[in-house]
Image 1: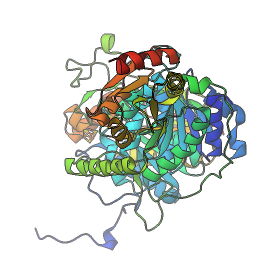
Image 2: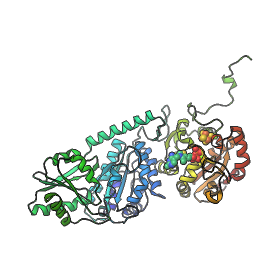
Image 3: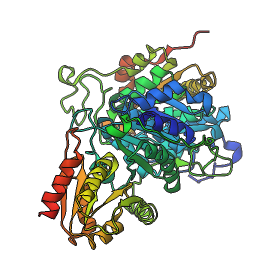
Image 4: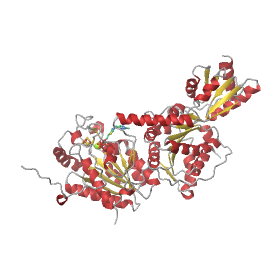
Length: 349
Length: 255
Ligand SMILES: Cc1ncc(C[n+]2csc(CCOP(=O)(O)OP(=O)(O)O)c2C)c(N)n1
Ligand code: SF4
Ligand SMILES: [Mg+2]
Protein backbone atom coordinates (compact mmCIF):
# COMPACT_ATOMS: atom_id res chain seq x y z
CA UNK A 1 0.00 0.00 0.00
CA UNK A 2 1.01 3.63 -0.45
CA UNK A 3 2.36 5.09 2.78
CA UNK A 4 -0.24 7.80 3.18
CA UNK A 5 -3.12 5.45 2.42
CA UNK A 6 -1.84 2.80 4.78
CA UNK A 7 -1.62 5.43 7.48
CA UNK A 8 -5.20 6.54 6.83
CA UNK A 9 -6.42 2.95 7.01
CA UNK A 10 -4.47 2.53 10.24
CA UNK A 11 -6.33 5.51 11.71
CA UNK A 12 -9.68 3.85 11.00
CA UNK A 13 -8.45 0.56 12.44
CA UNK A 14 -6.98 2.22 15.51
CA UNK A 15 -10.53 3.21 16.43
CA UNK A 16 -10.13 6.90 15.69
CA UNK A 17 -13.28 8.93 16.34
CA UNK A 18 -12.50 11.83 14.07
CA UNK A 19 -10.10 13.13 11.44
CA UNK A 20 -9.92 16.79 10.41
CA UNK A 21 -7.60 17.84 7.59
CA UNK A 22 -6.76 20.16 4.75
CA UNK A 23 -5.17 19.09 1.46
CA UNK A 24 -1.46 19.60 0.87
CA UNK A 25 1.11 17.64 -1.14
CA UNK A 26 2.62 15.16 -0.35
CA UNK A 27 -0.02 13.98 2.14
CA UNK A 28 -3.41 14.66 0.47
CA UNK A 29 -3.90 10.92 0.00
CA UNK A 30 -4.67 10.65 3.71
CA UNK A 31 -7.89 12.67 3.54
CA UNK A 32 -8.67 11.42 0.03
CA UNK A 33 -8.47 7.83 1.22
CA UNK A 34 -10.62 8.58 4.26
CA UNK A 35 -13.26 10.35 2.18
CA UNK A 36 -13.32 7.46 -0.26
CA UNK A 37 -13.42 4.85 2.44
CA UNK A 38 -16.17 6.71 4.35
CA UNK A 39 -15.38 5.26 7.78
CA UNK A 40 -18.63 6.69 9.18
CA UNK A 41 -20.21 3.54 7.69
CA UNK A 42 -17.50 1.20 8.96
CA UNK A 43 -16.88 2.47 12.48
CA UNK A 44 -18.73 5.76 12.90
CA UNK A 45 -15.49 7.72 12.55
CA UNK A 46 -16.09 11.31 11.44
CA UNK A 47 -14.03 12.85 8.64
CA UNK A 48 -14.15 16.52 7.73
CA UNK A 49 -12.25 18.70 5.31
CA UNK A 50 -11.63 21.93 7.21
CA UNK A 51 -11.21 25.41 5.75
CA UNK A 52 -7.57 25.54 6.85
CA UNK A 53 -4.98 23.72 8.91
CA UNK A 54 -5.73 26.19 11.70
CA UNK A 55 -9.37 25.18 11.74
CA UNK A 56 -8.46 21.49 11.47
CA UNK A 57 -6.21 21.49 14.54
CA UNK A 58 -8.83 23.43 16.51
CA UNK A 59 -11.46 20.89 15.51
CA UNK A 60 -9.05 18.28 16.86
CA UNK A 61 -8.86 20.32 20.08
CA UNK A 62 -12.66 20.31 20.41
CA UNK A 63 -13.02 16.58 19.75
CA UNK A 64 -10.03 15.71 21.97
CA UNK A 65 -11.56 17.83 24.74
CA UNK A 66 -14.50 15.41 24.64
CA UNK A 67 -12.08 12.52 25.24
CA UNK A 68 -12.29 11.29 21.66
CA UNK A 69 -9.48 9.90 19.51
CA UNK A 70 -8.89 12.76 17.09
CA UNK A 71 -6.28 13.09 14.40
CA UNK A 72 -5.05 15.48 11.73
CA UNK A 73 -2.32 15.32 9.13
CA UNK A 74 -0.54 17.79 6.92
CA UNK A 75 2.82 18.66 5.43
CA UNK A 76 5.31 21.30 6.50
CA UNK A 77 3.61 24.63 5.57
CA UNK A 78 0.35 23.31 7.01
CA UNK A 79 2.08 22.07 10.14
CA UNK A 80 3.39 25.58 10.73
CA UNK A 81 -0.24 26.73 10.83
CA UNK A 82 -1.06 24.04 13.36
CA UNK A 83 1.59 25.17 15.80
CA UNK A 84 -0.70 27.58 17.67
CA UNK A 85 -3.25 24.82 18.15
CA UNK A 86 -0.63 22.30 19.21
CA UNK A 87 0.62 24.65 21.91
CA UNK A 88 -2.97 25.02 23.19
CA UNK A 89 -3.53 21.26 23.07
CA UNK A 90 -0.30 20.64 25.00
CA UNK A 91 -1.27 23.37 27.47
CA UNK A 92 -4.77 22.01 27.99
CA UNK A 93 -3.27 18.49 28.22
CA UNK A 94 -5.38 16.89 25.54
CA UNK A 95 -4.49 13.74 23.60
CA UNK A 96 -4.29 13.82 19.82
CA UNK A 97 -2.28 12.54 16.87
CA UNK A 98 -0.74 14.82 14.26
CA UNK A 99 1.06 13.54 11.19
CA UNK A 100 3.64 15.62 9.33
CA UNK A 101 4.61 14.23 5.93
CA UNK A 102 7.56 16.57 5.67
CA UNK A 103 8.51 18.43 2.50
CA UNK A 104 11.43 20.80 2.03
CA UNK A 105 11.29 24.42 3.09
CA UNK A 106 11.57 27.17 4.14
CA UNK A 107 8.46 28.91 2.85
CA UNK A 108 6.54 27.10 0.18
CA UNK A 109 9.79 25.26 -0.58
CA UNK A 110 9.26 22.19 -2.72
CA UNK A 111 6.94 19.23 -2.50
CA UNK A 112 9.96 16.90 -2.44
CA UNK A 113 10.76 14.95 0.74
CA UNK A 114 12.81 16.40 3.54
CA UNK A 115 13.52 16.09 7.25
CA UNK A 116 13.81 19.82 7.81
CA UNK A 117 10.97 20.01 10.36
CA UNK A 118 12.94 18.11 13.04
CA UNK A 119 13.51 21.24 15.12
CA UNK A 120 9.88 22.33 14.79
CA UNK A 121 8.64 18.90 15.90
CA UNK A 122 11.14 18.25 18.67
CA UNK A 123 12.00 21.67 20.07
CA UNK A 124 8.53 23.19 20.38
CA UNK A 125 7.48 24.98 17.21
CA UNK A 126 4.60 26.67 18.98
CA UNK A 127 4.97 28.97 21.96
CA UNK A 128 5.60 28.03 25.55
CA UNK A 129 7.48 25.24 27.35
CA UNK A 130 5.88 22.15 25.91
CA UNK A 131 6.86 18.91 24.24
CA UNK A 132 5.33 16.76 21.56
CA UNK A 133 6.05 13.06 21.67
CA UNK A 134 7.59 12.53 18.23
CA UNK A 135 7.63 9.18 16.39
CA UNK A 136 9.76 8.78 13.27
CA UNK A 137 8.74 5.88 11.00
CA UNK A 138 11.21 4.53 8.45
CA UNK A 139 8.83 2.20 6.62
CA UNK A 140 5.20 2.09 5.60
CA UNK A 141 4.78 -0.68 8.15
CA UNK A 142 6.06 1.56 10.89
CA UNK A 143 3.76 4.44 9.85
CA UNK A 144 0.87 2.03 10.24
CA UNK A 145 1.99 0.67 13.60
CA UNK A 146 2.86 4.13 14.91
CA UNK A 147 -0.70 5.38 14.41
CA UNK A 148 -1.87 2.91 17.03
CA UNK A 149 1.13 3.59 19.25
CA UNK A 150 0.60 7.34 18.87
CA UNK A 151 -3.00 7.15 20.10
CA UNK A 152 -1.92 4.96 23.03
CA UNK A 153 0.84 7.36 24.06
CA UNK A 154 -1.40 10.40 23.53
CA UNK A 155 -3.99 9.03 25.94
CA UNK A 156 -1.45 7.61 28.38
CA UNK A 157 0.15 11.02 28.84
CA UNK A 158 -2.69 13.29 27.68
CA UNK A 159 -0.29 14.90 25.27
CA UNK A 160 -0.18 15.53 21.52
CA UNK A 161 1.87 12.98 19.59
CA UNK A 162 3.41 13.74 16.23
CA UNK A 163 4.30 11.18 13.59
CA UNK A 164 7.18 12.78 11.70
CA UNK A 165 7.08 11.09 8.33
CA UNK A 166 8.33 12.47 5.03
CA UNK A 167 7.47 12.57 1.37
CA UNK A 168 9.39 9.36 0.68
CA UNK A 169 7.50 7.26 3.23
CA UNK A 170 4.18 8.94 2.41
CA UNK A 171 4.43 8.30 -1.32
CA UNK A 172 6.22 4.94 -1.24
CA UNK A 173 4.46 1.63 -2.00
CA UNK A 174 5.39 -1.19 0.37
CA UNK A 175 3.91 -4.39 1.68
CA UNK A 176 2.23 -3.89 5.01
CA UNK A 177 0.50 -6.00 7.55
CA UNK A 178 -2.47 -4.14 8.93
CA UNK A 179 -3.60 -4.75 12.47
CA UNK A 180 -7.16 -5.88 13.13
CA UNK A 181 -9.94 -3.30 13.42
CA UNK A 182 -10.12 -2.02 16.99
CA UNK A 183 -13.50 -0.92 18.35
CA UNK A 184 -14.00 2.79 18.94
CA UNK A 185 -13.85 3.42 22.66
CA UNK A 186 -16.87 4.75 24.48
CA UNK A 187 -14.91 5.49 27.61
CA UNK A 188 -16.03 8.67 29.38
CA UNK A 189 -12.95 10.40 30.77
CA UNK A 190 -13.47 12.56 33.84
CA UNK A 191 -11.49 15.40 32.19
CA UNK A 192 -13.66 15.38 29.06
CA UNK A 193 -16.51 17.80 28.31
CA UNK A 194 -19.47 15.51 27.75
CA UNK A 195 -22.15 17.56 29.49
CA UNK A 196 -22.17 18.41 33.18
CA UNK A 197 -23.06 15.48 35.44
CA UNK A 198 -25.51 16.15 38.28
CA UNK A 199 -23.73 16.70 41.59
CA UNK A 200 -20.33 16.96 39.87
CA UNK A 201 -18.34 20.09 39.06
CA UNK A 202 -18.50 21.23 35.47
CA UNK A 203 -15.53 20.15 33.35
CA UNK A 204 -13.33 22.91 31.97
CA UNK A 205 -10.80 22.40 29.21
CA UNK A 206 -8.40 25.33 29.20
CA UNK A 207 -4.75 26.31 28.95
CA UNK A 208 -5.27 29.63 30.75
CA UNK A 209 -3.97 30.48 34.23
CA UNK A 210 -4.03 34.17 35.06
CA UNK A 211 -1.91 33.83 38.22
CA UNK A 212 1.80 33.22 37.72
CA UNK A 213 1.85 30.92 40.74
CA UNK A 214 -0.82 28.75 39.12
CA UNK A 215 0.84 28.84 35.70
CA UNK A 216 4.13 27.76 37.25
CA UNK A 217 2.35 24.80 38.83
CA UNK A 218 1.00 23.84 35.41
CA UNK A 219 4.49 24.10 33.93
CA UNK A 220 5.95 21.98 36.73
CA UNK A 221 3.26 19.37 36.19
CA UNK A 222 4.00 19.32 32.45
CA UNK A 223 7.73 19.02 33.10
CA UNK A 224 7.17 16.13 35.50
CA UNK A 225 5.12 14.44 32.79
CA UNK A 226 7.89 14.96 30.23
CA UNK A 227 10.42 13.39 32.62
CA UNK A 228 8.12 10.33 32.81
CA UNK A 229 7.96 10.21 29.02
CA UNK A 230 11.75 10.40 28.84
CA UNK A 231 12.04 7.57 31.34
CA UNK A 232 9.50 5.23 29.75
CA UNK A 233 9.13 5.87 26.06
CA UNK A 234 12.54 6.03 24.40
CA UNK A 235 12.53 3.81 21.33
CA UNK A 236 15.39 3.16 18.91
CA UNK A 237 16.90 0.52 16.70
CA UNK A 238 20.59 -0.31 16.44
CA UNK A 239 22.39 -2.47 13.88
CA UNK A 240 25.98 -3.54 13.66
CA UNK A 241 26.90 -1.83 16.90
CA UNK A 242 28.44 -4.76 18.78
CA UNK A 243 31.88 -4.47 17.18
CA UNK A 244 31.41 -0.97 15.75
CA UNK A 245 34.36 1.40 15.60
CA UNK A 246 32.27 4.08 13.93
CA UNK A 247 28.60 4.97 14.16
CA UNK A 248 25.94 6.40 11.93
CA UNK A 249 23.00 8.24 13.47
CA UNK A 250 19.99 8.75 11.22
CA UNK A 251 16.20 8.65 11.45
CA UNK A 252 13.24 7.92 9.19
CA UNK A 253 13.73 7.28 5.48
CA UNK A 254 17.26 8.67 5.67
CA UNK A 255 18.18 5.85 8.06
CA UNK A 256 17.25 3.32 5.37
CA UNK A 257 19.60 4.93 2.88
CA UNK A 258 22.27 5.08 5.56
CA UNK A 259 21.79 1.35 6.19
CA UNK A 260 22.79 0.78 2.56
CA UNK A 261 25.92 2.84 3.14
CA UNK A 262 26.60 0.72 6.22
CA UNK A 263 26.42 -2.51 4.19
CA UNK A 264 28.79 -1.04 1.61
CA UNK A 265 31.20 0.03 4.37
CA UNK A 266 31.09 -3.38 6.02
CA UNK A 267 31.86 -4.98 2.64
CA UNK A 268 34.98 -2.83 2.58
CA UNK A 269 35.87 -3.97 6.12
CA UNK A 270 34.88 -0.76 7.87
CA UNK A 271 33.26 -1.61 11.21
CA UNK A 272 30.38 0.81 11.37
CA UNK A 273 27.06 0.53 13.17
CA UNK A 274 23.90 2.62 13.09
CA UNK A 275 21.51 3.98 15.64
CA UNK A 276 18.08 4.94 14.37
CA UNK A 277 15.97 6.85 16.92
CA UNK A 278 12.33 5.83 16.51
CA UNK A 279 11.28 8.40 19.06
CA UNK A 280 12.87 11.79 18.34
CA UNK A 281 11.36 13.06 21.55
CA UNK A 282 12.13 11.40 23.90
CA UNK A 283 15.61 11.09 22.34
CA UNK A 284 17.79 7.99 22.98
CA UNK A 285 20.32 9.99 24.96
CA UNK A 286 21.62 7.15 27.12
CA UNK A 287 22.21 4.72 24.25
CA UNK A 288 24.01 7.35 22.15
CA UNK A 289 26.10 8.31 25.15
CA UNK A 290 26.99 4.65 25.74
CA UNK A 291 27.93 4.10 22.09
CA UNK A 292 29.96 7.32 22.13
CA UNK A 293 32.23 5.65 24.67
CA UNK A 294 32.80 2.77 22.26
CA UNK A 295 33.30 4.35 18.81
CA UNK A 296 35.95 6.63 17.32
CA UNK A 297 33.46 8.97 15.70
CA UNK A 298 29.79 9.47 14.78
CA UNK A 299 28.37 10.65 11.46
CA UNK A 300 24.84 12.01 11.65
CA UNK A 301 23.05 11.81 8.32
CA UNK A 302 19.92 13.83 7.69
CA UNK A 303 17.85 15.27 4.85
CA UNK A 304 18.26 18.78 6.21
CA UNK A 305 21.01 21.22 7.05
CA UNK A 306 21.84 19.57 10.35
CA UNK A 307 19.18 19.39 13.05
CA UNK A 308 19.20 16.07 14.92
CA UNK A 309 22.99 16.36 14.96
CA UNK A 310 22.60 18.95 17.73
CA UNK A 311 20.86 16.40 19.95
CA UNK A 312 23.45 13.78 19.07
CA UNK A 313 26.18 16.20 20.15
CA UNK A 314 24.37 16.94 23.41
CA UNK A 315 24.10 13.21 24.10
CA UNK A 316 27.73 12.56 23.16
CA UNK A 317 28.87 15.51 25.26
CA UNK A 318 32.35 15.64 23.74
CA UNK A 319 33.16 11.94 24.26
CA UNK A 320 33.84 11.37 20.57
CA UNK A 321 33.86 13.50 17.39
CA UNK A 322 30.43 14.07 15.81
CA UNK A 323 30.17 15.13 12.17
CA UNK A 324 27.24 15.80 9.90
CA UNK A 325 26.36 14.93 6.34
CA UNK A 326 23.12 16.08 4.77
CA UNK A 327 21.33 16.91 1.55
CA UNK A 328 18.42 19.25 1.59
CA UNK A 329 15.89 21.15 -0.48
CA UNK A 330 14.25 17.88 -1.48
CA UNK A 331 17.53 16.20 -2.51
CA UNK A 332 18.10 12.68 -1.22
CA UNK A 333 21.60 11.53 -0.25
CA UNK A 334 22.94 8.42 -1.98
CA UNK A 335 24.64 5.58 -0.08
CA UNK A 336 27.88 6.37 -1.96
CA UNK A 337 27.84 9.97 -0.78
CA UNK A 338 27.22 8.86 2.79
CA UNK A 339 30.05 6.32 2.72
CA UNK A 340 32.37 8.94 1.25
CA UNK A 341 31.37 11.37 4.01
CA UNK A 342 32.12 8.69 6.62
CA UNK A 343 35.53 8.04 5.13
CA UNK A 344 36.46 11.70 4.78
CA UNK A 345 34.89 13.31 7.83
CA UNK A 346 35.20 10.55 10.41
CA UNK A 347 37.74 7.92 9.42
CA UNK A 348 40.14 10.22 7.60
CA UNK A 349 39.38 13.19 9.86
CA UNK B 1 -33.00 55.35 58.72
CA UNK B 2 -33.19 51.95 60.35
CA UNK B 3 -31.72 49.15 58.29
CA UNK B 4 -33.94 46.17 57.74
CA UNK B 5 -32.99 42.91 56.09
CA UNK B 6 -35.05 42.58 52.93
CA UNK B 7 -33.37 39.37 51.83
CA UNK B 8 -36.13 36.87 52.48
CA UNK B 9 -38.01 34.40 50.31
CA UNK B 10 -41.25 36.43 50.23
CA UNK B 11 -39.36 39.38 48.74
CA UNK B 12 -37.77 37.31 46.02
CA UNK B 13 -38.81 38.61 42.62
CA UNK B 14 -36.02 37.24 40.45
CA UNK B 15 -34.16 34.07 41.20
CA UNK B 16 -30.61 33.39 40.06
CA UNK B 17 -30.50 30.48 37.67
CA UNK B 18 -28.52 27.45 38.77
CA UNK B 19 -26.82 27.48 35.38
CA UNK B 20 -24.74 30.38 36.70
CA UNK B 21 -22.11 29.79 39.35
CA UNK B 22 -21.73 31.99 42.45
CA UNK B 23 -18.35 33.34 41.38
CA UNK B 24 -17.97 37.11 41.43
CA UNK B 25 -17.67 38.29 37.84
CA UNK B 26 -14.57 40.17 36.76
CA UNK B 27 -16.47 42.36 34.29
CA UNK B 28 -16.38 46.15 34.66
CA UNK B 29 -19.43 47.82 36.22
CA UNK B 30 -22.21 48.26 33.68
CA UNK B 31 -20.67 45.88 31.13
CA UNK B 32 -23.13 43.97 28.96
CA UNK B 33 -21.20 40.68 29.16
CA UNK B 34 -22.69 39.83 32.58
CA UNK B 35 -26.28 40.36 31.44
CA UNK B 36 -25.68 38.44 28.22
CA UNK B 37 -24.24 35.54 30.23
CA UNK B 38 -27.24 35.53 32.46
CA UNK B 39 -29.75 35.56 29.61
CA UNK B 40 -28.02 32.63 27.94
CA UNK B 41 -27.80 30.75 31.25
CA UNK B 42 -31.51 31.28 31.86
CA UNK B 43 -32.33 30.04 28.36
CA UNK B 44 -30.28 26.88 29.07
CA UNK B 45 -32.04 26.52 32.42
CA UNK B 46 -35.54 26.93 30.97
CA UNK B 47 -34.81 24.24 28.39
CA UNK B 48 -33.46 21.92 31.10
CA UNK B 49 -30.33 21.13 29.10
CA UNK B 50 -27.60 22.04 31.62
CA UNK B 51 -26.23 18.49 31.47
CA UNK B 52 -26.46 18.27 27.71
CA UNK B 53 -24.68 21.39 26.59
CA UNK B 54 -21.03 22.19 25.98
CA UNK B 55 -19.88 25.78 25.64
CA UNK B 56 -16.80 27.27 24.01
CA UNK B 57 -15.26 30.42 25.51
CA UNK B 58 -13.29 32.85 23.33
CA UNK B 59 -10.22 34.97 23.91
CA UNK B 60 -11.51 38.37 24.94
CA UNK B 61 -13.07 39.76 28.09
CA UNK B 62 -15.28 36.67 28.29
CA UNK B 63 -12.30 34.30 28.25
CA UNK B 64 -13.27 33.22 31.76
CA UNK B 65 -16.92 32.59 30.83
CA UNK B 66 -16.36 29.01 32.02
CA UNK B 67 -16.17 30.32 35.58
CA UNK B 68 -19.67 31.75 35.33
CA UNK B 69 -21.60 29.20 33.27
CA UNK B 70 -22.11 26.06 35.29
CA UNK B 71 -21.85 23.84 32.24
CA UNK B 72 -18.97 21.88 30.68
CA UNK B 73 -16.84 24.26 28.67
CA UNK B 74 -13.72 24.47 26.54
CA UNK B 75 -11.51 27.53 26.14
CA UNK B 76 -10.53 28.13 22.52
CA UNK B 77 -7.59 30.02 21.02
CA UNK B 78 -8.37 33.56 19.78
CA UNK B 79 -10.97 33.32 17.01
CA UNK B 80 -11.03 29.54 16.81
CA UNK B 81 -14.18 28.87 18.84
CA UNK B 82 -16.33 27.88 15.83
CA UNK B 83 -13.72 25.29 14.79
CA UNK B 84 -13.49 23.95 18.35
CA UNK B 85 -17.30 23.82 18.50
CA UNK B 86 -17.31 21.96 15.17
CA UNK B 87 -14.94 19.37 16.62
CA UNK B 88 -17.18 18.93 19.65
CA UNK B 89 -20.43 18.73 17.70
CA UNK B 90 -19.02 16.24 15.18
CA UNK B 91 -18.15 13.77 17.93
CA UNK B 92 -21.14 14.56 20.17
CA UNK B 93 -23.96 15.21 17.70
CA UNK B 94 -26.64 14.67 20.35
CA UNK B 95 -25.33 17.42 22.65
CA UNK B 96 -26.06 21.13 22.42
CA UNK B 97 -23.01 23.25 21.61
CA UNK B 98 -22.55 27.02 21.76
CA UNK B 99 -19.76 29.52 21.32
CA UNK B 100 -19.67 32.89 23.04
CA UNK B 101 -17.39 35.35 21.22
CA UNK B 102 -16.47 39.01 21.04
CA UNK B 103 -16.23 41.04 17.84
CA UNK B 104 -12.44 40.91 17.61
CA UNK B 105 -12.50 37.18 18.19
CA UNK B 106 -15.35 36.40 15.80
CA UNK B 107 -15.07 39.06 13.08
CA UNK B 108 -11.31 39.73 12.82
CA UNK B 109 -8.92 36.93 13.72
CA UNK B 110 -11.65 34.26 13.52
CA UNK B 111 -13.46 35.42 10.37
CA UNK B 112 -12.58 32.29 8.42
CA UNK B 113 -13.67 29.96 11.22
CA UNK B 114 -16.92 31.91 11.66
CA UNK B 115 -17.84 32.00 7.98
CA UNK B 116 -16.98 28.39 7.31
CA UNK B 117 -18.73 26.99 10.38
CA UNK B 118 -21.83 28.93 9.29
CA UNK B 119 -21.35 27.86 5.69
CA UNK B 120 -21.18 24.20 6.66
CA UNK B 121 -24.31 24.81 8.69
CA UNK B 122 -22.77 23.38 11.85
CA UNK B 123 -25.60 22.74 14.26
CA UNK B 124 -24.29 25.08 16.91
CA UNK B 125 -25.33 28.38 18.48
CA UNK B 126 -22.93 31.27 18.01
CA UNK B 127 -23.46 34.13 20.45
CA UNK B 128 -21.67 37.22 19.19
CA UNK B 129 -21.05 40.11 21.58
CA UNK B 130 -20.48 43.19 19.44
CA UNK B 131 -19.16 46.04 21.57
CA UNK B 132 -17.30 47.72 18.73
CA UNK B 133 -13.97 47.44 20.48
CA UNK B 134 -11.26 45.15 21.83
CA UNK B 135 -12.26 45.32 25.48
CA UNK B 136 -9.79 42.90 26.97
CA UNK B 137 -6.61 44.35 25.54
CA UNK B 138 -7.51 47.89 26.54
CA UNK B 139 -9.77 49.44 23.94
CA UNK B 140 -8.16 48.99 20.51
CA UNK B 141 -10.10 49.29 17.27
CA UNK B 142 -12.23 46.29 16.34
CA UNK B 143 -13.54 45.29 12.90
CA UNK B 144 -16.90 46.58 14.17
CA UNK B 145 -15.68 49.99 15.44
CA UNK B 146 -17.91 52.70 13.95
CA UNK B 147 -16.58 55.23 11.42
CA UNK B 148 -15.03 58.13 13.30
CA UNK B 149 -15.14 56.23 16.58
CA UNK B 150 -12.11 56.71 18.79
CA UNK B 151 -10.08 53.85 20.20
CA UNK B 152 -6.50 53.49 21.35
CA UNK B 153 -5.45 52.42 17.85
CA UNK B 154 -7.71 54.95 16.10
CA UNK B 155 -7.02 57.90 18.41
CA UNK B 156 -8.29 60.39 15.84
CA UNK B 157 -11.34 58.29 15.11
CA UNK B 158 -11.66 55.39 12.66
CA UNK B 159 -10.66 56.69 9.25
CA UNK B 160 -12.50 54.38 6.89
CA UNK B 161 -10.28 55.34 3.96
CA UNK B 162 -7.27 53.69 5.58
CA UNK B 163 -8.79 51.48 8.28
CA UNK B 164 -11.73 50.05 6.41
CA UNK B 165 -15.40 50.16 7.20
CA UNK B 166 -17.05 48.33 10.08
CA UNK B 167 -17.82 44.75 9.19
CA UNK B 168 -21.47 43.71 9.39
CA UNK B 169 -20.61 40.06 9.74
CA UNK B 170 -24.10 39.17 10.97
CA UNK B 171 -25.67 40.31 7.70
CA UNK B 172 -22.89 38.43 5.94
CA UNK B 173 -23.53 35.08 7.62
CA UNK B 174 -27.28 35.54 7.11
CA UNK B 175 -26.54 35.32 3.37
CA UNK B 176 -25.11 31.83 3.77
CA UNK B 177 -27.35 28.85 3.11
CA UNK B 178 -25.88 27.15 6.17
CA UNK B 179 -27.40 29.54 8.70
CA UNK B 180 -30.91 28.83 9.95
CA UNK B 181 -31.69 31.66 12.32
CA UNK B 182 -29.82 34.98 12.47
CA UNK B 183 -30.84 37.81 14.75
CA UNK B 184 -29.45 40.96 16.34
CA UNK B 185 -30.41 41.80 19.91
CA UNK B 186 -29.26 43.86 22.89
CA UNK B 187 -29.31 43.44 26.66
CA UNK B 188 -29.07 47.07 27.84
CA UNK B 189 -32.67 47.32 29.09
CA UNK B 190 -34.91 44.70 30.73
CA UNK B 191 -37.27 44.35 27.75
CA UNK B 192 -34.33 43.91 25.36
CA UNK B 193 -32.62 41.44 27.66
CA UNK B 194 -35.78 39.34 27.77
CA UNK B 195 -36.00 39.41 23.97
CA UNK B 196 -32.36 38.38 23.70
CA UNK B 197 -33.05 35.48 26.01
CA UNK B 198 -36.03 34.39 23.93
CA UNK B 199 -33.83 34.51 20.81
CA UNK B 200 -31.10 32.37 22.37
CA UNK B 201 -33.67 29.93 23.70
CA UNK B 202 -35.25 29.62 20.28
CA UNK B 203 -31.81 29.15 18.74
CA UNK B 204 -31.07 26.30 21.13
CA UNK B 205 -34.45 24.72 20.41
CA UNK B 206 -33.66 24.90 16.68
CA UNK B 207 -30.39 23.02 17.34
CA UNK B 208 -32.45 19.86 17.89
CA UNK B 209 -33.79 20.14 14.35
CA UNK B 210 -30.30 19.89 12.78
CA UNK B 211 -31.17 22.63 10.32
CA UNK B 212 -28.02 24.70 10.52
CA UNK B 213 -26.16 27.36 12.43
CA UNK B 214 -28.02 29.80 14.67
CA UNK B 215 -26.31 33.14 15.11
CA UNK B 216 -27.35 35.63 17.78
CA UNK B 217 -25.56 38.98 17.78
CA UNK B 218 -25.85 41.08 20.91
CA UNK B 219 -24.94 44.72 20.37
CA UNK B 220 -23.32 45.61 23.64
CA UNK B 221 -21.30 48.27 25.42
CA UNK B 222 -17.81 48.59 26.80
CA UNK B 223 -17.85 51.47 29.28
CA UNK B 224 -14.13 51.03 30.02
CA UNK B 225 -12.99 50.84 26.41
CA UNK B 226 -15.36 53.60 25.33
CA UNK B 227 -14.22 55.75 28.29
CA UNK B 228 -17.78 56.43 29.45
CA UNK B 229 -19.91 55.79 32.50
CA UNK B 230 -22.24 52.82 32.17
CA UNK B 231 -25.25 55.12 31.70
CA UNK B 232 -23.44 57.22 29.08
CA UNK B 233 -22.32 54.11 27.26
CA UNK B 234 -25.85 52.77 26.98
CA UNK B 235 -27.09 56.12 25.67
CA UNK B 236 -24.19 56.29 23.20
CA UNK B 237 -24.95 52.75 22.08
CA UNK B 238 -28.60 53.59 21.43
CA UNK B 239 -27.70 56.75 19.53
CA UNK B 240 -24.75 55.45 17.53
CA UNK B 241 -24.53 51.66 17.48
CA UNK B 242 -28.20 50.81 16.92
CA UNK B 243 -28.61 52.96 13.80
CA UNK B 244 -25.62 51.20 12.24
CA UNK B 245 -26.42 47.77 13.69
CA UNK B 246 -30.24 47.76 13.71
CA UNK B 247 -31.84 45.35 16.16
CA UNK B 248 -34.19 42.60 15.01
CA UNK B 249 -34.30 39.30 13.18
CA UNK B 250 -32.23 39.12 10.00
CA UNK B 251 -33.02 35.58 8.94
CA UNK B 252 -35.85 33.54 10.35
CA UNK B 253 -36.75 29.95 9.47
CA UNK B 254 -39.45 29.60 6.85
CA UNK B 255 -42.69 28.50 8.46
C1 LIG C 1 -3.38 35.09 18.75
C2 LIG C 1 -3.72 36.18 19.66
N1 LIG C 1 -3.61 37.46 19.22
C3 LIG C 1 -3.92 38.49 20.05
C4 LIG C 1 -4.34 38.24 21.34
C5 LIG C 1 -4.64 39.42 22.25
N2 LIG C 1 -6.06 39.62 22.45
C6 LIG C 1 -6.69 39.12 23.52
S1 LIG C 1 -8.31 39.53 23.56
C7 LIG C 1 -8.18 40.43 22.14
C8 LIG C 1 -9.34 41.16 21.57
C9 LIG C 1 -10.63 40.79 22.17
O1 LIG C 1 -11.63 41.61 21.70
P1 LIG C 1 -13.10 41.08 21.48
O2 LIG C 1 -13.08 39.79 20.79
O3 LIG C 1 -13.86 42.17 20.82
O4 LIG C 1 -13.63 40.80 22.96
P2 LIG C 1 -14.03 41.82 24.10
O5 LIG C 1 -12.87 41.83 25.04
O6 LIG C 1 -14.30 43.14 23.50
O7 LIG C 1 -15.24 41.21 24.72
C10 LIG C 1 -6.88 40.39 21.65
C11 LIG C 1 -6.43 41.10 20.44
C12 LIG C 1 -4.42 36.90 21.77
N3 LIG C 1 -4.78 36.55 23.00
N4 LIG C 1 -4.11 35.91 20.92
S1 SF4 D 1 -13.30 46.08 29.20
FE1 SF4 D 1 -15.27 46.48 28.28
S2 SF4 D 1 -16.02 44.48 27.55
FE2 SF4 D 1 -14.36 44.13 29.02
S3 SF4 D 1 -15.37 43.84 30.98
FE3 SF4 D 1 -14.78 45.98 30.85
S4 SF4 D 1 -16.57 46.98 29.99
FE4 SF4 D 1 -16.82 44.80 29.62
MG1 LIG E 1 -15.22 43.49 21.61
